[in-house]
Image (cartoon, rainbow, N blue to C red):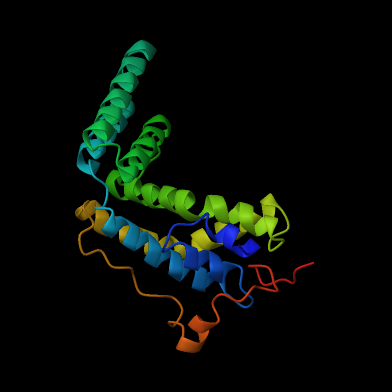
Length: 220
């Protein structure tokens, strides 16, 4: 099997296209962001959204509110934290370990521990979206693009990811708003594309190996 196929196998269907485009010559970060936005929307829609979201949202809200008024003592806060984490784990079990539910549980724990400000439901789903992107795409893409000499090193890969995430932020906020209202993500569609959809000739050339880095600079 060709070497590039080995790298592509790290990605599930729907996410593989984003990786192919990312390594191609002349592909803009906006194009990659559009593909990832579509893949994320499809993942949530086909995966039934985030099962158990409402229950987890209530746990997070209770803990954030408790932190705001104070728990009375460090011991009481620790007990509340243990209870919250136990409930989150039970919710995951109740939904048969659904991937999105497990991701949401980890995100919920992070929000509880750090208790940063903002509308909880929207912030919660935004972070779930980012965690799905990391799991399904960025974790493998960073490693593979460096291995293929499309990006120089891990630091450059992190910068590449950060730029794409910034481009995607409005779309992620839009998706998060919809899922916060309808956690089953039924009928969820991707937000409008940034870049005009590729022509047929562009799609036929998708499998060509890139001669440049994903950030547009030449491969050394």
